[in-house]
Image (tube, rainbow, N blue to C red; front, top):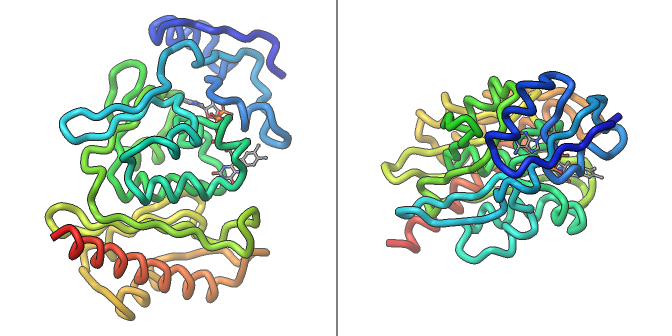
Length: 259
Ligand SMILES: Cc1cc2nc3c(=O)[nH]c(=O)nc-3n(C[C@H](O)[C@H](O)[C@H](O)COP(=O)(O)OP(=O)(O)OC[C@H]3O[C@@H](n4cnc5c(N)ncnc54)[C@H](O)[C@@H]3O)c2cc1C
């Protein structure tokens, strides 16, 4: 249970508090996860990020920069964000939750369902940390540590990109969330959540440059989902293949429209 709540007004102060209290302390973004059952934190000390002035979006030489404390709804309402990111933010089904949750918290929470992470992976998002470290989102997910996330950077925000969430209802459990993008040099990105214990990129499939039913099959063969209340292994493989191939076709069409 949280017993002490610090509100530092600089990143340096926040890092100093974390150094002092170590595993007793937790970064506090929007608090939606830290305050809710059953994900309520057991740590004693909260270091609030509210006063760190990390709630903004900005453009820098064509790159989209997003402060880690930007609320999901605020970001969704921003002009000129990539359409796929706008769609993914809407996958968090409750507006109330989108008003409370922050993009940094959504990434750092590493929850079972990460509906926004696939699109960020497909867009090759980079993270900037409080100590100045810059790392790809994929590297962070593999080894998050106790880093303080301050900024999310998307260098190529308008590459053709599309995302879809498969669930039986808007608020129902998610079977899979997929995102696909085509990079400037005709590379493809395929990112998934829901078919492994954490979000993943299908790098082997990406390099094969497939489409249509060949892509469907390659995706189905590349994943190893668990059977659960959401569906059987065969169903998850089948639907993921279909969704990825369909998203890739959408991206190809977007690319043609730009030309
Ligand atoms: C009722 C309910 C329904 C939900 N439904 C969905 C849903 O449909 N889809 C979905 O994706 N999620 C859902 N979630 C999860 C929730 O939206 C995310 O966990 C949320 O985005 C976390 O954001 P936050 O800013 O509130 O994080 P917090 O609760 O403040 O923190 C979450 C974790 O992230 C860490 N953290 C926060 N900010 C940072 C930072 N800048 N740097 C480093 N670490 C940080 C905290 O230390 C903590 O470990 C739901 C949660 C609840 C309570």
